[in-house]
Length: 495
Ligand code: GLA
Image: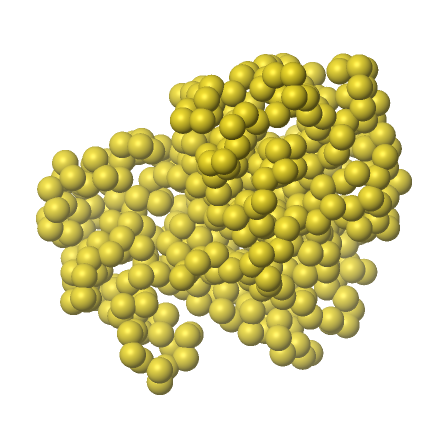
């Protein structure tokens, strides 16, 4: 995909949403514009929009440098924006009264704005996008003042990337307000780094999916040697395939649980890479498993990708020493010895900016997940290219294997996710797995269009009716839904 392309500007919503969604979205945009006018006494100049995403395959491997395959969903973050030259203040309000209106000011070209990552404050996500873009705009003396009203429809903590949708639309709002000459590629790369300002060391999948997706396509995102995306046409099957997303409603906020979950996993994969560089005799010590892979196979053109992952995994498993804690993992001191670095150095390098709380590091299990998961991404992409009568079974089997690995080796599933996946598989899903960071949040299932109603009914009857019996019909429809690959970031001016 062209690297210099800019985020498109549209004057009609049918460029952004599927026909079936136009009525609902039209009413939502009108409401946003009307509320904006009530609050600020003027109309917005434009609306910046970025969607959430569902990841089809490739979980927890983007921050190791490996490719992943998400697609955007209809749920998104839309921000109505008006600008002023009178001041540099940013006034931000939300159509959801749960989020209080705030105001902050530009703090000069050096600092831009202060983000307190010890606080779980909703506007931090806006500040991340704002700061990231203005840091890049070296020539801009004074940014515009902004009036903002936001409407987010990606449920927070659901694994559908509400945070990336917010950061990317904030970045886009800032670009557009200040007429910054930034491409989609730059917007994405900056947003990836900028989002880490909230205190989670996340990879780049969500932002890439949010910005680059297009209707009807999944997106193969790769990170090495630099961020690149490729549209993947989902195969035409008989009956047509469909994806259903079901939220377990177990809230998994990455920010809250990061030290024991997300940030810890990132560190474990880095430690595994440090160890394998030494143990496998690579040229130099690296801390990403993708670099381990690249160095290990430098000059080997004879094996296929799938064979390479198998070979490397075998070599890695043999190289790891037995842990002394019955499979719980290694202590920091043990890891320090294994990677030949002082424990203090490891601590400073990997556990300070993004704090980590743990007694043990499970390097063997994490390595097993990462190499097999990337192998599954490669296989998934290959099946999409050559569809035949077994396509649904094959894609489903890959998704099921991913779920098993996330559960068993990456420990990022939870009982509710496992239950929903089981119900799905018993009711016509070829494959079912967690999507996003896990530890709650959403599952994604592969089924056929005619089976969608049966699958949704089964999940409502066998999961929500038992675990969340008091949900309203609207909440239920919000929790489990069929989804199509949606379009990525856009600026809307059709009003
Ligand atoms: C979160 C992160 C992504 C990715 C997934 C897990 O969504 O933001 O970068 O690591 O978890 O695959």
